[in-house]
Image 1 (cartoon, rainbow, N blue to C red):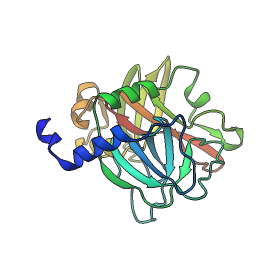
Image 2 (cartoon, rainbow, N blue to C red; image 1 turned 180 degrees about the vertical axis):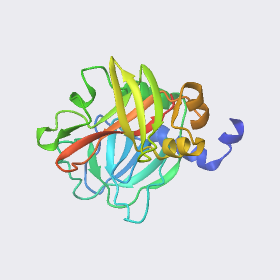
Image 3 (tube, helix red, strand yellow; image 1 turned 90 degrees about the vertical axis):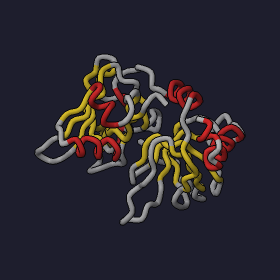
Length: 239
């Protein structure tokens, strides 16, 4: 730890987090500079903890068509909001649009992150995202429910790979429900591919990932043929 504390980049990231002015709500002013702690990232959206408010936000990042996101869990990133942040998606009320690609500043873990994740974990208030099954019609959403849920699984998670189509799935138990979600977490997908196994759970999964997965980051997709789909966009440690 002492050696890490001598790293200027580590010190700068720590100072940024400790000195970020706190707000009661997310800054939505067009053109504002925003900072976030990445929880999961796909080319569709990057889910972050907004450092100023500790709220979960989804950033729509304008990735070029030929570039895949290279952001990973617990990266600290800086972005600039577009002039029109597009807060009109009723299926994704937390989503805002960035003007350009975010800048990676460093990584951050530890007790403060553990506290944020504990506070952000979704309570049991019915089925995931308010409906059972893998998807719901877009026209049923009213912007009243979040499109991100950080799940503290009470059984699992288990990582599965289907040989027939090569897709990767996450299975976990949550307050009596047996949940299966398509996995879009690049690290988890690479992990099970490298083991050449069709299933990983428990100690085997923790060893392969390099950490014990405590949380499952789940999100709702943009409409696909008129439906929004549940997926897993991150397996996360305690912090």
